[in-house]
Amino acid sequence: MSGDRFIRTMKAVAAQINPTSEITDMVFGVVTSVSPLKIKVDNRFEIDSDFIILSDNCVLKSITIPAQTISFTAHTDSHSVTVPASTVVLWDNLIVGNTVKMLRCSKGQLYYVLERVI
Image 1: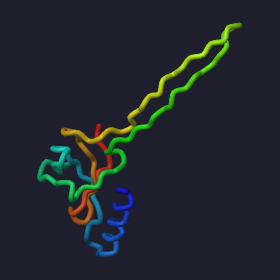
Image 2 (image 1 turned 90 degrees about the vertical axis):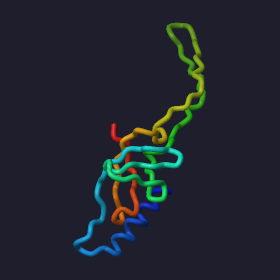
Image 3 (image 1 turned 180 degrees about the horizontal axis):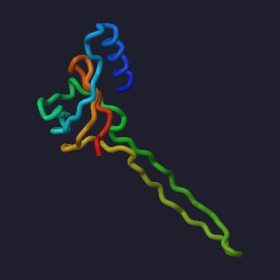
Image 4 (image 1 turned 45 degrees about the horizontal axis):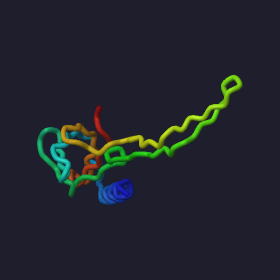
């Protein structure tokens, strides 16, 4: 998973660090392309998917709620209502123009996209 890769990278960086070097810093970017994924960082340069790890908040996540029949009694009459199945999108994929919050790691060799900025 992307989280595991991120943790491994952070541990590798921490193992090589000296007191004066930087571990990570937060930067902002704008999605300029989704296929292939490219993000313009701080309006200065563009990175591609080789340098990007996406958090779960930046990829399509949805849940399906199964159909249900609900029975109830109102006064003396019994009723039932069938609610159809539905899919709820929790997070959507990134799209061109999204502003994203990222952690810059390994002196800019890796960027972990945390979330969209709304």
